Length: 428
Ligand SMILES: Cc1cc2nc3c(=O)[nH]c(=O)nc-3n(C[C@H](O)[C@H](O)[C@H](O)COP(=O)(O)OP(=O)(O)OC[C@H]3O[C@@H](n4cnc5c(N)ncnc54)[C@H](O)[C@@H]3O)c2cc1C
Image 1 (cartoon, rainbow, N blue to C red):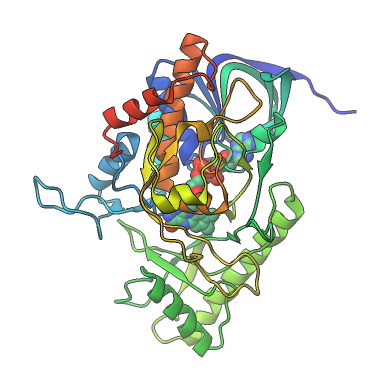
Image 2 (tube, protein in one colour):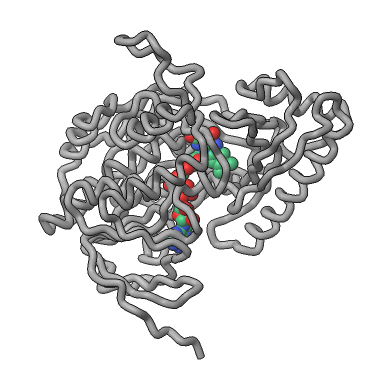
């Protein structure tokens, strides 16, 4: 017999499930628009893949405004971002912020901006079940190591990355590459010290492959054909990642656990084997990511589903939430796959329309982050952190407006979202 006694957390205008980059931005944006907001995060820090997964590179952030720009201003002023390849500020001639970010500074920033606007943050808590009333979510069951809780909200936002809440609400979804159904691989990240003096990291596609080739000359075989060694701004540490784990589906905790252990083992053994490489004898792991990085989860079906032709033709929408400027980034989906990255798709800058955040079939739910509605290749082109953060800011605004007016997200005029993002300095 399970004890399901719950403590009520209260009633909210907006409840956000998942405190990754898109969930944090959604929560802050909703609170700034006047909503009473609660943010439920499973782990002990905000930031998701960025912080838990040790991925310090917020790509496709240069044309973004709003909270993205606030984050970079905070980091830039402390020397905690990397202005390397950015465009020049027309006024000062200085490089605009690059995409490298200090992970710990981001954790601090996320704690601070959520607190500043009065978002109630519940860490170590996860949404475990939803009570449905027809096509509406009536309440949510939240479990934590310290007990069970319940909450109600006018609007719920699924920012769990893999669309866990939408699946609980009965939404339909798809997953994996169209022909095989295989998902992109998962990867364990790490922070290391002891990189060879003068080595500037693997910043380009070619450098990443060359590093893997260099390792194989020393008999070191890694599961990824590319190795990421990236210097972290502000301090003498690097992130190091060289492993791929295959076949992790959104409903298979056993496989997720196996790939986590495999990833950690491979990192440990790979770094240890560097002792044979001149200049890298002192390479050492400081920490591995507390959650293995999951590139792909459910793609929930929404009022609009981004298609291959949308991204190839660079389609713009009058309910656009942000402009995606980078291309498709698909890694090997199984160990025999010979295409390491990018399935050859060149995209033109395209909008992510608001309707991709409105799931079919549930009246008071919005999607934020990588579980929005899009096909496999579009997902691989918009999952960058700069874009997922922007989607969060847009969806948070829409959620607050829906809560205020009683309008269902489906009926909300997405052109207001476009105008809002433009007013926030996003290049549309
Ligand atoms: C290995 C790897 C490398 C990458 N490299 C880059 C890169 O270099 N640059 C770049 O821009 N992008 C990169 N990406 C993509 C990018 O990091 C992600 O697409 C983006 O961070 C997704 O943000 P999100 O908020 O949608 O999801 P996530 O970051 O996954 O956040 C989801 C959050 O929800 C929480 N959660 C999950 N289930 C529950 C639940 N039931 N209840 C409560 N909370 C829950 C999780 O703990 C997590 O904090 C990479 C991704 C991976 C995995």
